[in-house]
Amino acid sequence: MGISRRSLLLTAAAASTAGLLPPASARAAGSPPGDVVGRITVGYQGWFACPGDGAPINGWWHLSQDRSHAPSSPGNNALRAWPDMREYTAGHRTAYGPLGDGTPAVLFSSYDQQTVDTHFRWMREYGCDTAALQRFDPNGGEGATRDAVTAKVRSAAEANDRKFYVMYDVSGWTSMQEESKADWTDRMSRHTASTAHTRQNGMPVVGILGFGFADANHPWSPAACPDVITWFRARGCYVTGGVPTYWRTGVNDSRPGYLDVHHAFHMISPWTVGRIGTAADAGPPRPPPAAPPRRRPPGTSPCTGRPPRAATPRSTAAATPSTATRTRTGESANSAFPQWIQVDLQTVHPVRRLVLAVPPAPGWAARTQTVAVLGSTDGTAFTTLAGAAGYRFDPATGNTAVLTLPAAVQTRYLRLQFTGNTGWPAGQLSALQVFAR
Image (cartoon, rainbow, N blue to C red; front, top):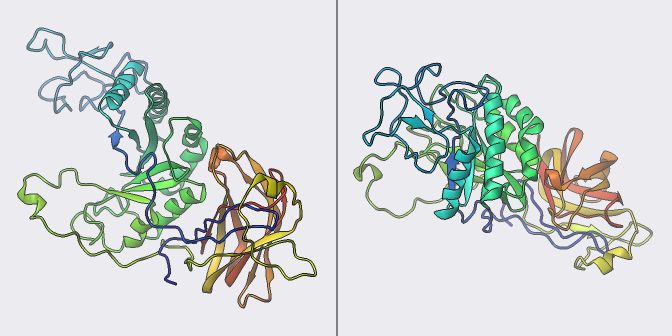
């Protein structure tokens, strides 16, 4: 079998009377239609404000060069085109004189809920499915306003049957490696509870824009970027990446040496704004380029594509792989721990961190499973890599659990041994990821 460039991701069914099951296969590179795959997604800035609109920033945010003064021409103007204000109920007066039709020169604010409602109504009317809300460094003076706009976007998406998710734009964000994690944990992850939050493959979507761009605003090394991506993946997120136009070849707007970074995303969206000014810039029609070499994300262990072994409780009889399918009737009669599932990595690899998953809601409530990890280099003699401990699977965090070994180990065979489950009388597992760090 070939080696997948993705981390070990085994889609095994949940436990049955015979134990953990059934044959699993390596996850395909593509994804089925969901909230982003097969949909139209728009970028949403939500970064306009005006004095008097109630926004904490209290200024002409992104509307004038000096936000403490109203837009005027020519010296204090950040506008490229005047918005059509006819469908907004609130307009904020600028320093310009009346427009050509005699109406006052007013502008909208993203802090007005009706503004955001109007934009999401337009999305519904014109067939746009999802909004990726840009989130720049939220730790300065703009943070409180950005937090409030996120709540307004959530409300508008729910009211208009649209989807939304947060896309971190790391441009100029010096401490993004740790601060983005804290921001997600403390503030943004709560929005995944919304019925309007974008999900793909059952996972909440989060975006990161800016890795690998060849400019001073995006200085992070190929080693720093995967740390952020794998952190979000380990928390059950489907991670999209805004990448340079020339990400594949590492020239022009792209730094070389970032292919592994881009491959660590679940999905990428190359940035082409401003890259094509004329038809000639687009180049002549040509066949699609050959696929790049298959690579796996940095810091992960490879997947063999082979099914795992699964077994009933170990007793005097030898364990055999399960072939049953998951049904309530079969599971409810079991209650026979311990049970285990085992995977062969095909060769010895470093292993430090495992991400376990059960299917997402609906139908799968929160549960705690007691799991130990064993390893072997020959498939016969196993040693304990992590003792039995309880791991929480919660729909609010994607029904995933992260299991970190005390230290990185070299192993070929990994065995998860289940001895308890508060949600069902058998061990349950739908996906397993194995990381080297």
